[in-house]
Image 1 (cartoon, rainbow, N blue to C red):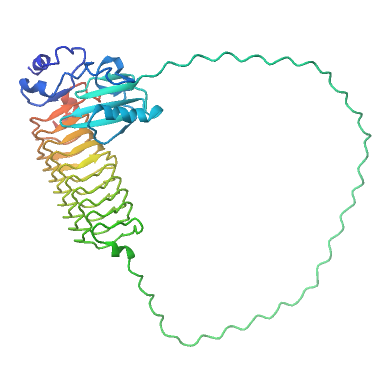
Image 2: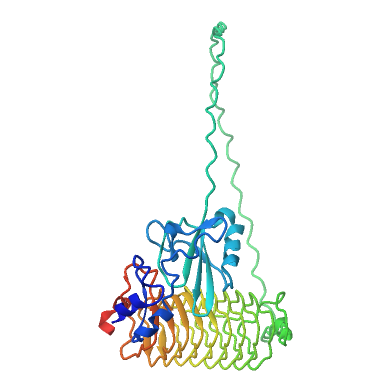
Length: 423
């Protein structure tokens, strides 16, 4: 019945040559056409961008000649396709193609640096390849060098008569050694020092001058060492903490609203119960840190290192979790990820017990060997994501949308996205 509904959906019957790789578990056949649109496999967008064309004349995800996604750089969420094209044009030879995606309320732009040969049909994806100008005409062959007149070889001068070398005189004998002398007498041992009291302990180190900057709207650009500091309940909202060392620092219940921690070294730090709304942790090293019960609404962790980071019961609604390739064994038990965008990440062996993933958009995320227990999947969308050997036993996946366009081995079958031993 699902296959019949797919063929009867608007915009699908005229694209029989492009297989559909998006499906919704237990969804009604009348709603199938709501997420498999007419753009998949059609060429309705081809040719409207100057200097670009769609490979093999149809929309879809970009692929190299060996069926790979290729090397690309993902930009921040954009609004229009023309903006993505202008970014590719500005990079000249560093950009060969770009991919523009429009998925359930957000857009994404990928700048590709490898040669793209064709597309695979993916809902909401469009791939554009730069149109190469014709090669210049070949240069004419170089002219042969002019012949040189033959010059007779010069006559060699007569060799001088050989003179025998002078005779070698034997070396003179070394001078005799000097007569031995008696060694000088050794000095007398030094007298014992007079009695002295025990030495005084060294003075305590001076206080950290960076602590004097702990206040709202502070700039720590010239004072970047706050390791092992006790900053509980401190007020650091709107502060610049980029590249600051915060290793083992305690920031429990601190107010860090709209503070920036880009490239900061904050491993083993404590952010429990902290207010981090709109904070920017992009590129920061927060491995083994604790964000339990922290408020992280609209926070950014793009490219951060979050090995074994604890986000238990943290509020991550609307947060940006992109490019988390160093994110093994992350704890998300009881975390609120409603409406959160998670993209291009490896959440291997993650723990999601009682996690709220309602209306979350998950794109190209690897959940290998992760644990799912009591997760709210209502309205969630998973694109190009993997669940190899993940524990999903007993989970309700009603209404969840799975789109598998980039994994050629999946072949559009949902049961191959998961390890069968857990189903």
